[in-house]
Length: 345
Image (cartoon, rainbow, N blue to C red; front, top):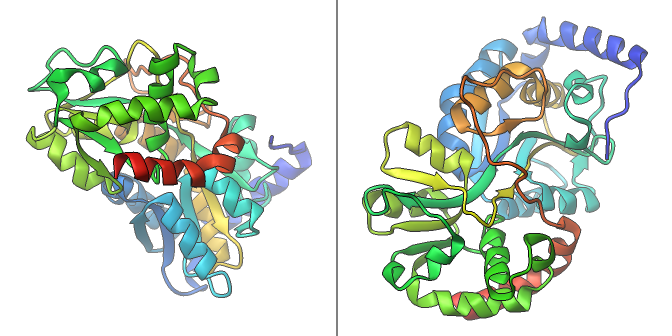
């Protein structure tokens, strides 16, 4: 799960990239827009700060298809014979499934030079996909209702939170954080061990239901409830969503509870047999480069995977966010979703 490139490969890759980026006409000659799939919640800052930079540099037009990772996976399956999307931004556990099903085209340092420049752990299966950022997750809260923030995941279960809690569905990757936190609170086990005790987590979640205002699959819609004050707590939220709204002046904050936070590396991949292959390579290379990652760090409050990216003054992030055993999650997720629906539906 590392990127291994020789000096010769890097020199060849750099030359290939320089030629490609220096001739946007090559990309335009492919014809059509570059369709990029990704999470609905990232649409705002991507369209405002990131895509325009890439469009100007490469001479292409990006069309963003915002939804959930699992929905993008279904689209890739349905369109396997004639893909519509060229690039997809998805969570690692869903990337793993897409790779196993043969839906991804392996990236190469020759066409994506920055693949050899990001942190080795950010490159999976020798180029199946790569991580371009590392958001962290905690508990979002309404700052008017809770001006002191949230000290513990236990706050979700407190009587004062009755009817004021928003929870992500387990269909969303961020729904997993609530399940693991619930298991931790029920058993006292650290996250590393609590992740394997889903039964304890579901037992604890059953006790949360009276406090739940809604369970969402669409994060932006749920965010409106938090910002309006109809809800005061929203579990499992990413820095790349909530802190953007905080910076925009919304009455929301993101707490790193005392029990710990969670890590959700964001992946980028090339769709196998997708249209506009050269533009897809160039787009992915830009996402892995320091210029775009520096924008993402500043605008979406994530950690970069390219060491050359610039961190803003005073930039801080929780230490050692927990990343779960994704292979274990993938083996059990379908059954967990069924149990989740029975308890939280």
